[in-house]
Amino acid sequence: MPIAPQLPQIKYVNHNGDSIILMGDNLTYIDVDPLRSFEWSYVLSNSVSGMGGRATSFSRRPRVIPLEIRMRGFNRAQAIAQFNRLQAITETDCIAEEPGRLYVGNQYLVCYLAVASSVTSALMVTNFVIREVQCLVTEPYWCTEDTTVFNIASHDELDTTGKKYNFKYPYRYGSGYTTGEIVNAHYAPCPAVITIYGPCENPTAIIAGTTINVDVQLTSSDRLVIDQTSHQIYTLNVYGQKTNVFNARNKQYDIFRKIPVGRSNVLYDGSFKMVVTLIRQRSELEWTV
Image (cartoon, rainbow, N blue to C red; front, side, top):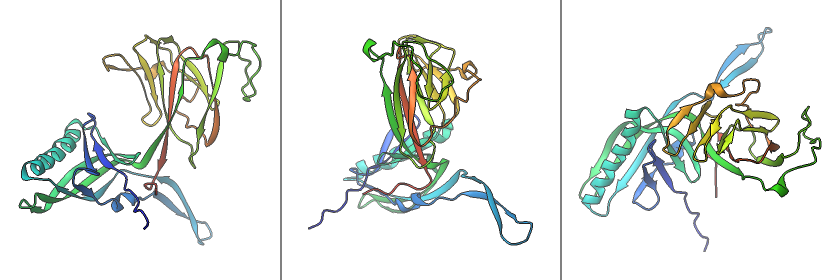
């Protein structure tokens, strides 16, 4: 007898990190099919001959997706707690004007889960409700993260010969550099979130031929975040305090250049820990087993 495929867990995580399971182990079910819809905006122009034309300026804009959520509880008290929890978690985002994430397995959509909601059925005898919610998608693509960690290099991992690296860079690097690579297995270039951990000063790395350099000084409890998805550069201290250091970037290089498809070399001096998280973006929720 064939084994039925196991559906991925679906959950919503608000901007504060509070979450609620929408399909999994709490008697809640959400219809996934509407989440697979997508639409590109574009500009059409006619050819001079009057025969045919071309499409340009393709873009994806924020959009609203109607979703149906069915919620049940083992008893009335549990059901009421679930109904109220969904409201509290989603409305917090609207009040703060900060989106959350809707996860289907390891894929997520940046959105406000409920900018509008209505109850289409409420059977309190069976502790069951059906809610119709309007999901506002602010970043209209599904994201999957691939993370590569570059730890502080040991002396044996550092190059001490001062040789010229075969990376097609017009420079000869001195001793004390270490190399690695990241792999973009997606079908398109990907933005990355690059996190550098202190202590270090003026951290520099070359990723896929692009120099990443920010003139900051980090203590052992600080970290620098370069977020190519939001075009933000900031530091975080041990208390989570966020400081904007966007203007401290080396403006000679395009620090927000996406990571190309395939294997890319990484070169840095190995004196600090660096984490590179590629964000694979696609219009449609990826089909899985």
